[in-house]
Length: 102
Image 1 (cartoon, helix red, strand yellow):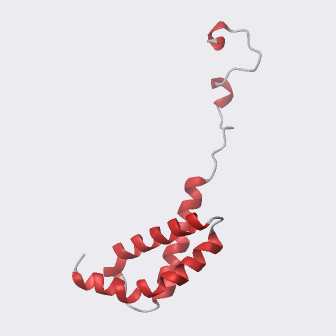
Image 2 (image 1 turned 135 degrees about the horizontal axis):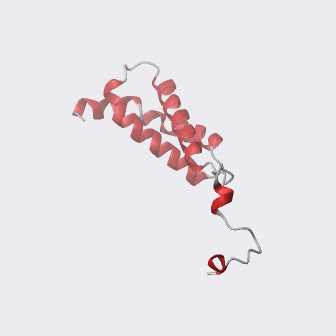
Image 3 (image 1 turned 180 degrees about the vertical axis):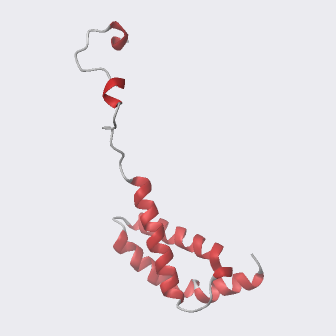
């Protein structure tokens, strides 16, 4: 990342941090999660600063945050255990099989 990238980050991103935090609070259930979402957004914006054209900075940042929030929701979504074939892998309750009792 060049010094011009750091300058672009300071110019376009840093002034929007309070607005990002307000938006993140609407997406999450806790202040800590909101801060984590903002941090992830800032990191992604820092990596992409060279590709940013300089127009509509807040819309660009909001899009990054929205996508980060979607990815975060996918990561924490509970997985179901009712997958085909799972019933054979788990012993039934009350089984008298000695291997199950171990």
